Image (cartoon, rainbow over all chains, first blue to last red; front, side, top):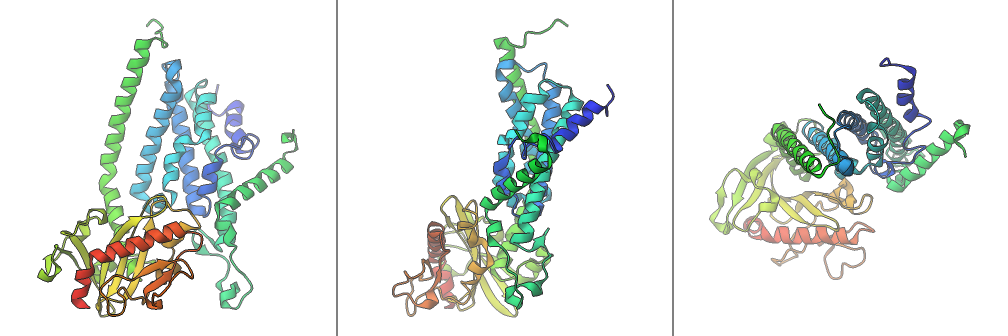
Length: 211
Length: 233
């Protein structure tokens, strides 16, 4: 089987759209609420989850035949926890401000259901390359939704993107304009509502997902 | 090689032990390799917090500005009247390690005026709070503040880290008129009693417990530095 066969393409593309971990499987919602008030932490979180899912998938897939069945969940957890600790250390060393913003949520990647789900459902049965693709696909599927939500929340809540002012300053009430930032967008609850809207739009577009 | 029984007890135990040892070595290696970079980041962050208390915010060159503004990071002993214990080295003292015998104080010069920056720490609703309070040379008037927190509720308690709250301390007086007790308080709207408007700021609406934490932190922190501030009062 070639590396970029049709089946492997399916493994990669599935989670981006028709099998999206957030929009279809509704996994990993808690972190989606917490880190999406701005675009930058949302992207860093999405990338972190992508990297960790991909590599933990590969590692588990490589050692899947040696793992004692009775402690397989513990082994999966140890691998994920080790990777998360490494990523968290790297973030602290090279993007300190983002790691402060993400605070506990990097550590909580360990409990992200997407990770454990992919390890148990996919990496335990498939080869390293397929598992890698599956991890990247699921991580990016998660990241896409985070970025959409982060984009909407930052531009409506702060009038900025990546911290740069997008809504012109002269449009604000303070400066004689008619515009006010929507403070509600900065609250975690709005992330849930936006995620729901994303799922709605996604289902309306993919009619066959309706059941 | 014969197929191993991966379900036996001995195999399971050895597998777990080996895995844990490998992971432990790996993590120890990564942590110690990245430690210097992380420490540098933490130090830089602390400097930018001290500068924020001096109303110098959102700057690119934190290290340069800090070196320019902060003249001394002195350490005071138990008796402030004997002067400083050490002219420098206060920066290395973490706020959580402050004792009556070992009190760091930052002496800054902003626009030609001398300011003193007092580090404070306390407890909020969910976790630790800390901050820096910059005081004018009179030892009485607040020049600026910076507060942060470990894990206060986003949108409520976490708002103590926002600039509008910190700016509300500007120009407030630490001591009540003619008294030597720390009067500066954070108070729920309408509960100020007989306090002079110079001595309190409004707490964050909906975050009474965090606001109380900030109040206690300011009180106990400044109480501990009272004698140092009074020298100049």
